[in-house]
Length: 174
Image (cartoon, rainbow, N blue to C red; front, side, top):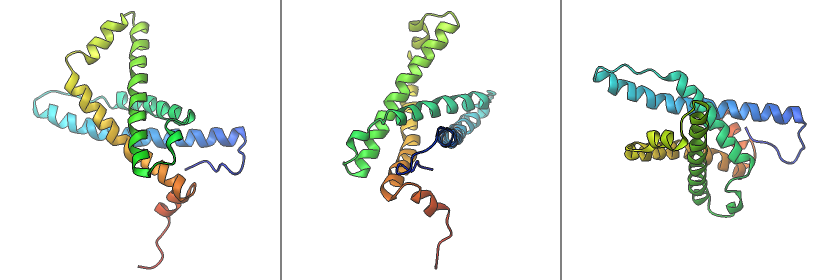
């Protein structure tokens, strides 16, 4: 669902639109992260280790969803709109990934402060010795962001709201 920029929206309409967009994005992230957690659960259960963090996945999806919407609010990557769509999607994917990494580090620092830990120790615990895991998580996040950003860019190119109309309308003829 995209904002129609030709007609001004009231504050209530804008709030409703942004809440809807946040809900859809968070649901998308939850499904993606949930699939990864199911995979991790299957592997760990095969080794006899119990693992079930779906509540944590929901919270992470909500937080990262808000971070992505923050990036949209500051129009992250929009100055390169004249590039080819594929380059724009790749560029924005990398920018949004960098934004999510930076804001996740800030989030971890805030959590450390709240729990009375030193920031450096908390960050070292999450990154130290886990470089392959951190790189894999970043690559997966990029792969999750690309379809979302591609749908946003295609919606802009086709005309705001047109992509979703095309996706959910019945096709005429066979």
